[in-house]
Amino acid sequence: MRILVAIPVYNEEKYVDSVLERVLQFAPDVLVIDDGSTDSTPCMLPKHRVEVIRHAENRGYGRSLGDAFRWADAFGFDWVITMDCDEQHEPAAIPRFVEAIESNKADIISGSRYLNLDDASGSPPEDRRAINRQITSEINERLGLSLTDAFCGFKAHRTASLRKLEITETGYAFPMQLWVQCVAAGLRISEIPVRLIYNDPTRSFGGPLDDAEQRIAHYRQALHCELERCADRLPASALVDVAAGCRG
Image 1 (cartoon, helix red, strand yellow):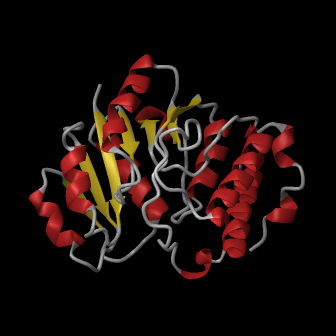
Image 2: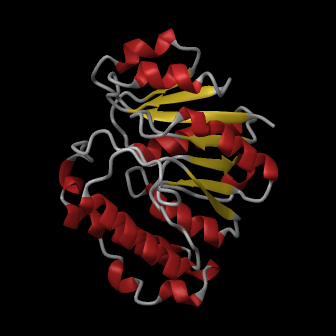
């Protein structure tokens, strides 16, 4: 069983050293996808025993994950665990994902920050939590899932299952495509609890997505467009009023 830990980074000079040092305690194979950082992040990466993909310019969170998936497949990894580099995903949780992988009960194992809030550290801004709750509820209703956290980037993905997906979303709406295509492909999905950590409520999405109304509209449009695109492989409940939400 070969497992790759993949970490997208963008201007993470504040955190990258400490995160990579801790990740390497739990994972021998680590890939960093530097999404066009303009701070000192690229100069810090060679200090660590990690593979690096470097984007010449910022291409988006979804593009970084897609590159990680292609790397994992090309180099013969059975699973790829994705996590963020802002100290909001605990490297110490990696063994829990490995344990879930070894149980062989799922193809996508998604971390949830809301399954167990007893050990939470900080809380997300209310608009982010509200959008997560609202979109997660809509995804569950449309796709017959029971997710509690549709947006957590701490996940384990079976590489062979990823070959069934065609992810084209390059930005933060990546989960919209992922969940729809996972259901359309008949993949098994499970959640495991991960600690809710929110150190910096001022972190930006960049551009218009910093506006909560524009962000939820963007997510909903991406979701509805993907539902429409995969309509022939989805339950009828997924397709109610879909066309009205897919414009542009």
